[in-house]
Image (cartoon, rainbow, N blue to C red; front, side):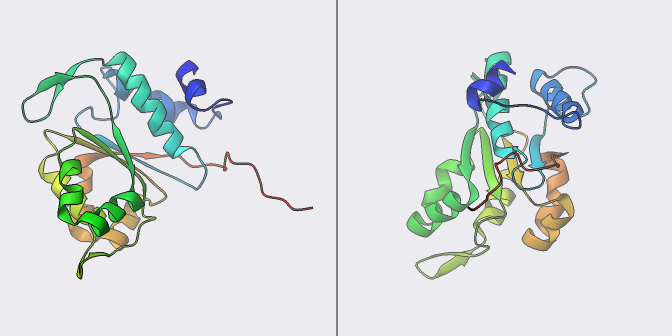
Length: 194
């Protein structure tokens, strides 16, 4: 909770969130008997405002503390645990601006978080060449799943993956991700007017 409150002052957990968070932190510490596979990334999905993006920042920091150096990547070089967090919409903007070169350095990041997946435009153009940037990125990351991990925060449930990204990506997600549902009420303050 100390790390969580450094990242988000006032961070609290509801009773329904505690078992889910406990499983995630067993995954972080690679404890035996954890239900989540340590060889897979995390797909954290749930309602708007339930703290998915905040949670991935907490996981990142916590893992950095408890897993300081571990082999990863093609060379299996021991590196400090660190996730590169990028919003899905920013990944699409990088493609629109720089084409495939704009994504090339992201494809081979050891630990990549795609934050707010599903909020981006499905097709993004670069000088007339349109592509589903996130779909293509997930396919490329799938090919490297034994060397690199991918993490996602999204409002999309697992069945919605097929609708948005198609059957090829849906079929591969089970090998890439541990699916975690983070549902409940929004932690953001209600809007009101006078």
